[in-house]
Image 1 (cartoon, helix red, strand yellow):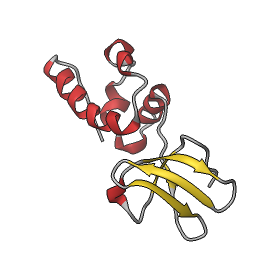
Image 2: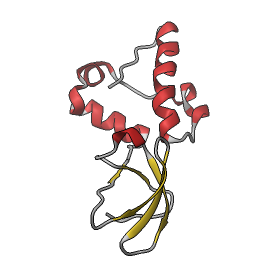
Image 3: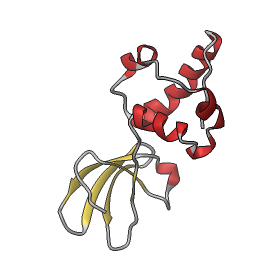
Length: 119
């Protein structure tokens, strides 16, 4: 795994730590990560596994969903366009906060009559 400062990662063996941000990488074996639920940890990468946490850009995600990936039959059938005016003011937002905000924003949009689907 290529590790760079600021990269978002998670430790599959410690899911309670949540998402972490790479603070330092010696370019070899040791990497220091700050996890939201686990604090600062230095890992020996010969024994520790870290997964990179990624996300697609909004337009890419809609394209994938419209192709029918991820069981998105409603979006494939009815999804026509994005409404950036409804979410653009939230960006940029840290990944962890975005996962919490997604639920609340979806609720508010549904109350206003918008069709909102979530995973």
